[in-house]
Image (cartoon, rainbow over all chains, first blue to last red; front, side):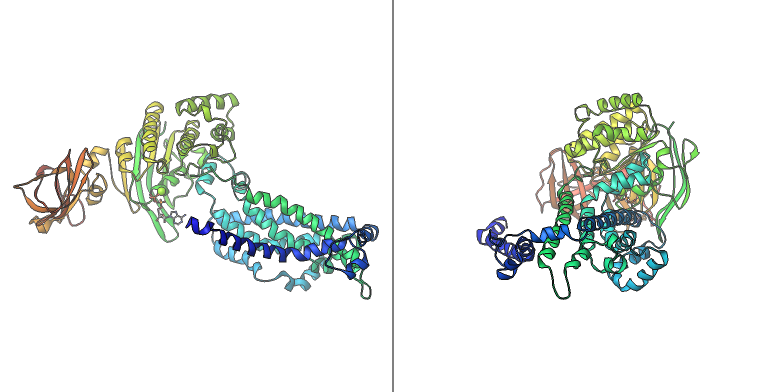
Length: 279
Length: 332
Ligand SMILES: Nc1ncnc2c1ncn2[C@@H]1O[C@H](COP(=O)(O)OP(=O)(O)OP(=O)(O)O)[C@@H](O)[C@H]1O
Ligand SMILES: [Mg+2]
């Protein structure tokens, strides 16, 4: 077995496949970042070559920072993403704990109901959501976006987290109860640290669609005050003239925050703090 | 200080009745062992006593007070789990201290109790370590220490040794026995293991599918089992059960322990062929296929040379033969 899995041709084959996939996946990103540092002529003349001293130009970035309130858009995106993420993780974990830990009437039905959102896209309810936001006066506010994204992220979070919480040793929770810990302490101090890797997984899955979303910012919060980065970048996408330098620069910049968040969460994925609790 | 009384406790999970009316009395300072086959409800009964599970009906009294609505932390109990269940993010010392801190014990008192418990269980070198940095045996000692520092009226152990290897199990068993002698506390101990039950218990409670089959001291259960189930469960190798009709007896089943059968090469009650022999050094287990009695096990002390296929005569000790009626109860 071990010799078979370690044989050289197999290793080369596996690496070749993975490298090819990586190249394909990274190609568009590299293209965007590369071209964002080139002059307009450079972009159209030779889109596939890296910036040379001749074509190198920061015009895209200066436009982005000069025009509109891009820093502000960034802030909006970050506030919306981080706040939604926080609520999704908090409420998702709490609901998952209740569903996995307590036996009550309608437990299974409740679990199914909460998971239903995975199959039904929230955008189907856009009109109703818009009416609701108008009625409550939340249009053009970040709160509206946070509420919608929290609702959007919860089903998957509950579904994934309750599976993981079922695996947390019931002896450990019972030991806490005998030591006089409250159910909240058991949840926050014993269970949450043990499911941290799965929380990180959920965080990554939740964060990226929120950061990239154009639909809800466009409909619920298109005002200058509440624009997010994806919406802000549309500014350069004219009907007749498109400022490619600026768009590419904005997109390159937009990758950074998600990348940072991703690095933070993926470190949690790797860290194994669970060993030693049981067995 | 530390008596327990259980009155007609029943527990059902949905339609499935797991405990079907348990009555039990444990006096102060007793070491009581629950044994029974897997799934018979031992852990469930222990969890009901601890308050981790509500009984469907019946009462649990600790020191004469009904604790049915008292939360686990206020019942004056401590529990040791099969999987250790240590807090992974806390050091050994804090693992032991947590329960006391929650109860508002003064720091000096906590310190004193941890000192005593860790000396008792030789845990001093590990106090600042986390559970992940300990071996299985050390972890289980920490779990026992966490129970000891609470100075409970009642210790509950749920198969505490079953995750340990054989040698460590013997050591830890010894430690638990010493602990009981030193603390003079009431202990309730769940196990599958016969040897643990026989060596530790003052009183053994044999459970079978949610009912108590018999309560008694180890020797009582061994010498005078109330029914076929207890007779078969206590003792190793298992008692031989022979169909009464085959032997021309009125009783439904005749039981005789392997150690109460003698063998002879020339004459005896039951003629049989050796099917298999297990040589354990101190004793020898022979499996005999007898014409009259069917397949029986014989335990001979010391070395006995018998080849498979050889003919032997087995004779049961008439004074140590049990007779069971059709309902499985012993006939006197
Ligand atoms: N939370 C639960 N929901 C439903 N059934 C349960 C639950 N807990 C236990 N049971 C059932 O109750 C029965 C008794 O379980 P229990 O854990 O008390 O057995 P046990 O005697 O401790 O067995 P073992 O020796 O294997 O630990 C089992 O049939 C089990 O399936
Ligand atoms: Mg059990």
